[in-house]
Length: 110
Image (tube, rainbow, N blue to C red; front, side, top):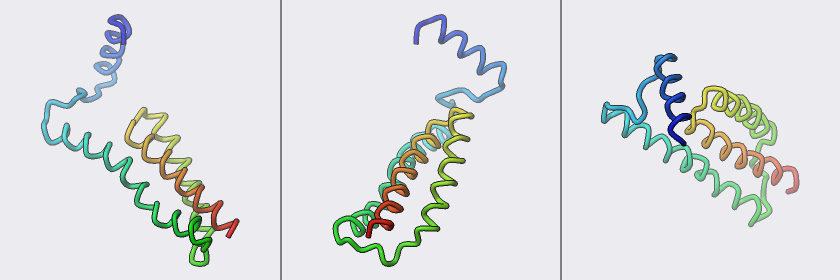
């Protein structure tokens, strides 16, 4: 960011009474970093399910209704993350949505 825009951004944070970023408290700083990792690793945990569907062409145990409802919840959380400019929420729910859409499409195909 250039100096002028950075200054305006800092002023906005002060007037909105937001906490400093990166936070001076070590625990909160570490928690911020852990959450970014969790935002990526969490959705990767559904990869075995996706592999099972597409590699083995088996979606017998998948509930399309359940994963479709997860997509609706992902949209709501993603909207919340965008509105509040929360990077971990945005990253996590984009990845969860990709994962859940993959599962739903696979369950409809197989």
